[in-house]
Structure formats: C-alpha cells, structure tokens
Length: 233
Image 1 (cartoon, one colour):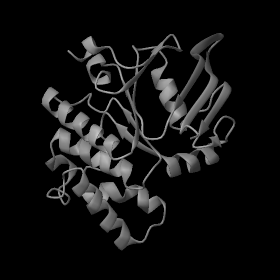
Image 2: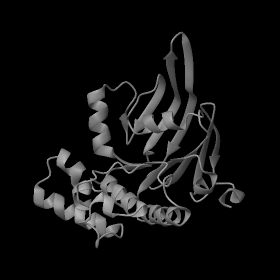
Image 3: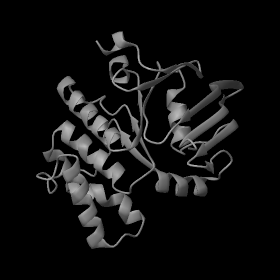
Image 4: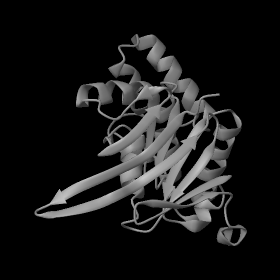
C-alpha cells in the first residue's frame, strides 16, 4: 500500500538577512495509513518546519513530498489550501475555538467551508462530539468548558470532515497531567479506529506513548522507530 506521507530528501531553507538558515537538511520518511507517530525534538530541531510541510502550510526548498499520492512540493498557495482542507485536520495547543460559539458550532466550521447543508452539518457535528465524549456538553460555549473538554472539541472539529491525516501540534501542552492522560487515551482510541495521527511534541513522556517516534536534531532525522521505554517515566 502506498504510504499516506512520503518524503524524499526534503530540505527547507530560510533567509534571515544575508544568512541562510537550514531548518530541514534532507528528511526521508514514510508514514502509512493508520499509524500513530510522534515527532519530537528540542527548539530549533526542525519539528515545527516539518509539521508545516506535512500540513501543507509550507513547501520544501528541495526534495519531494507526496500526501496521499498528491505531489505537494511546488504547489501554489491556492492548491495547498485546497489539499489541506480536503486531507488534513489540525489540533493545536491553544485550541483555537470561537469563544462565544457553542461547541457544536465550533465543530461544524470545516463543513461550512465545504458548503455542506446546515442540517447535515449540525448532525455530523453532534455525532462527532458524542464520539469524543462530549454529547452532554455540545451546547456549551468554550469558556464554559474545561481545558480537556475544549481540546476534545478541537479534536472533534479536526475529524468532522473525515480527513486523511490528523496533525496535532503540542496537543497537551496547556493541560494538567491527568487531562493529558485523558487526551492521549482519546488519541489511542482514534488510532485503534483506523485514524492516521501525527503528534508533534517536545515531551519525551508523551512521545513514548506512541508506537513510533521520529526524533529530529538540527533538521535531520536521528531516530525513527519504537520509543525508548524509559522515556515514559
């Protein structure tokens, strides 16, 4: 089976005045359908740049990137936007919810952009909130929810349009330890149901709960395989 994500020799360079900054220095990787993967690295390792390229928010300076068979390198902004909206669901550290909108209103937003009829949007949003354990809170606004509940709303929003890839950027960074465990359990449940999930994090204990860990250092992959058992402690 063709991998969902395929990168060959991906580099990303930036100019800062007269200086060239190398964010990625030749990344080769493949992620299959249904995998749960952690991308880990310290600040400056290149993980944010890699996430942006995976998420079609940026394109490589050189190298090849295919997402579900689509060549991403070289696409213009409009084409990237169309591919991103069709294939990727995002979960962010700070939730990025509309504060004055009910939970179901937040979840239906990706469907609004796809011109899905109103009744269908509402039904799909409510079904997804029920799936993530918030069927009893779907009419509550963001400020009426706990941090963990807000992240569940964000996960429901990311999934409601049935994307190929769920990309989570530091998804437990603003949560206490008990709630972190709850959110990771939800990710594992979604993985068991067949979703492809990539979690970008700097926390070794979080990465250790994923079956596969990709570690970056200075823009290169220095580890790709099972987690270090001691990292979970």
